[in-house]
Length: 468
Image (cartoon, rainbow, N blue to C red):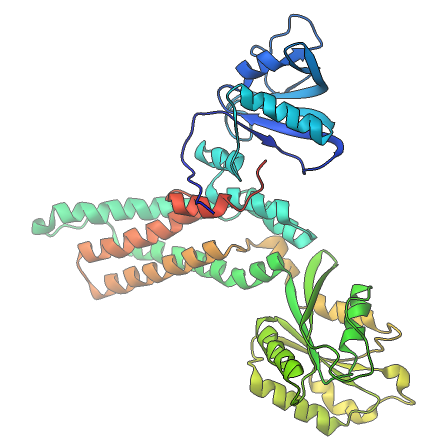
């Protein structure tokens, strides 16, 4: 696919802003300098002598879309005057009946009048170019559209409202002022003068490092909440992993069979618990096997476990000795690093027990839940346990970074500030300090769009839908 080039444009664009297909209504959005002159030609207001080129912004008008004397549809027209619109340009939205035929006829009519089709994300790109939002907020628009849970919606709304953008802009402004003074010293290098107060400068650097480190650390939470917290269900064949997955999802997603090794591949699906999305991974049973296909499934299991934030080890409580459980856990830990993962033990098939498994009392050192996946008993204990993995206070009270691009930029900015701090303490020349300062300014500015390239804009906005 040819790369899209997002630069400032003065032409007028249109696109369907609602989902494609038939519906009760459809909305066609127009933005640009020719919005109202073109509408003057195709829109016939119900009120006589009303001119669309002269009506106030933030108003709604009933009328007809016509091609010559042919009436295409009766519509409602929303008018937004620059700069008080989403894009900062003159904008109009045509709310027509949702017939695919009507949608196509209206768009064809607009194209015939010299308006062109919008590229993916071009409305939001224009909003960014016209200063209606910064780049981090523009990215959040895409996240908001894609959100499927309360936590994902909350993250996107937090970012759209400014998130940490203003903090980063303020710190960058102060850093830019100091950088200017440092570079001014270069013009007076022979006179050995200092315009930048080194003590205040070190204090600012420490402040920027503290803020960026806090944001960098929040990415671990933000990234999994944005994509759904990955939960791997592992255990020996026939321990009930697929039955548990089906019970949690409340549907027959995985094949359940008495034959060991039925699950040959990794099965994934998501559920939302109290507004948090969890992505469950039902894996092939962990056992030694000479069967080629099943062996490949086991290899994929360990690969998926590496990606999981939470690992649930399931065993058959009705017939698994404690020694075997410990052996399986040791074998599992030998294959993967569990230090950064939350580990929960699940004793399944309690419906087949005659009495409580007292010999499992040694497992209390690790979080253990006894369930019956078949009868769906104690599943609430599992969902409660999963929610403990989410820092709700951080999500509600702190700014959380969920963009991998922002995370990378923050890491590079932090490294540059460390180099500046180290250089100042070592007394290196101002010209060398200036190099690292410029690097820090670049990476901080790339988050909010104070510094951007066509490539960055293309990567961001090309992922948007056409009408946004």
